[in-house]
Image 1: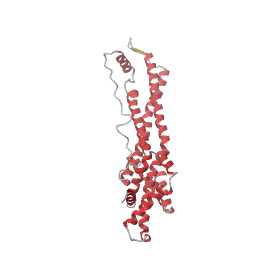
Image 2: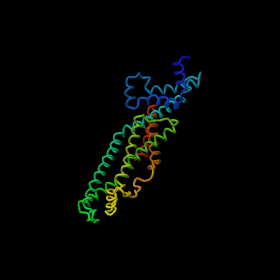
Image 3: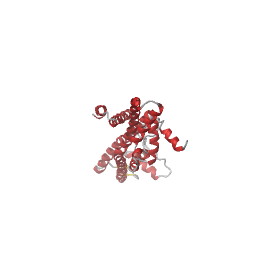
Image 4: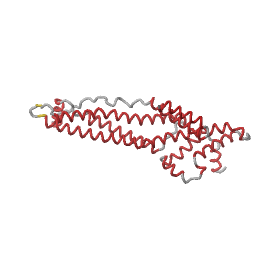
Length: 303
């Protein structure tokens, strides 16, 4: 048997899950959904996944029931096609969601970077005002003026807001990743669902957020004490090479560990499942059943 015949024989024995996993491994080599779609435009119709995989699973059913007329295999054909279409649309739902929200996610992370730069600038400006006010040689400290009080109020407000905004962005990413993990284990035998571009993009955002959190603790919360006496002692210690400079204890502003996204991830995974089922049913001509699922999606997850 030639290699081509062996490949053809293999494709005629694929279950819906095996067919979709084989297809995913192939298309993920393109790197992104956009690059795969651009390549697909110039390919013959039988390469289209919505034609290729349903034909594969129908051939597998026919191969398993050799000698049985197709008319008697109608239900088996329908189930196999519905299953593979559902898995295809589930894969698409996840990757299209990333593309839809990618720009907004990147913008939110960039905003966190800009806010961190603003915090560092505000902290430096405020410390400079404090340095001018505190008399280190006479160990005297004047009361802060209106300008410094206003700077302090603005700075502290920004310090309090930044962690919550960071938590929101972080939770959004982790929720999506956990939903994808749940779907992968449940329907794809743990196979990677996301295109490499999506995986790398999410990883980049998480790395940036992790670096920003370190900056927040080290540069914003750490080092310089808030009270004048501690500030004076800290600065004197920096000027004295023999002195030990102690940093103040950092509060757990961002909280220990990652935020709990289990509930949101399950809900998001369920949304993907309902949308994929509805698309599969619509593709098979079951429009009323598809509309019922769409209504359920709106009722349970949108309204």
